[in-house]
Image 1 (cartoon, rainbow, N blue to C red):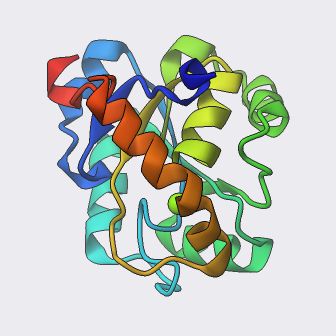
Image 2: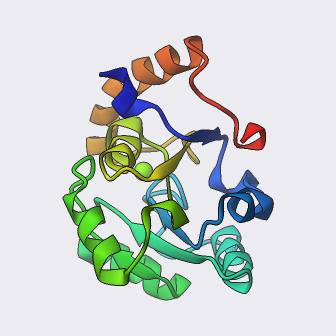
Length: 173
Ligand SMILES: [Mg+2]
C-alpha cells in the first residue's frame, strides 16, 4: 500500500533541483504539476522563476510539460504564457492519461520524471505509470479547496514516509 506513495526523490521545491540531477538520470522530459509546484493556483501567469527554469531546461535539451488536474482554461492560459506543452483535467492519481500522452509523444519511461507537490495525486500517478518522480513541498501556503481536502491524506502520509526514511533527497541520488 505504502509502496504506491514512495517518490523516487524528494526536493523542497522544483527550483532547487540542479540540472546535473536530470543529466545524471538521462531525463529528456519533465512532467510538472502546476498548482503549488510551479506557481500558486492564484498565479494566472508564470513568475520569472518558472520562466527561467523552462529556459534553462530547454537550453539543455530537456522539455518541460505541464500535466495538471486543473481545468483547461487555467492550464492553457498559464502554459501558453510559459511556452510549454500542457495537458489539463488529467485525473491524477490515475495513470491512463499519462501513459497515453507518453505513447503519443513517443516518450520512454526511463527518460521522463514527474514532479509534483502531492503524494496522493502526483506521486501515486507516476508510480502507476511506472515512471520516476520527485515529491516537493508546497510552494506557497494557499491551496484550492480540492487540494485542501487531499492534504488530509497527504500530510500523514508524508510524515510516515519521513519517519520511515523513505524521502530521499534529490542530492543523494
Ligand atoms: Mg499541485
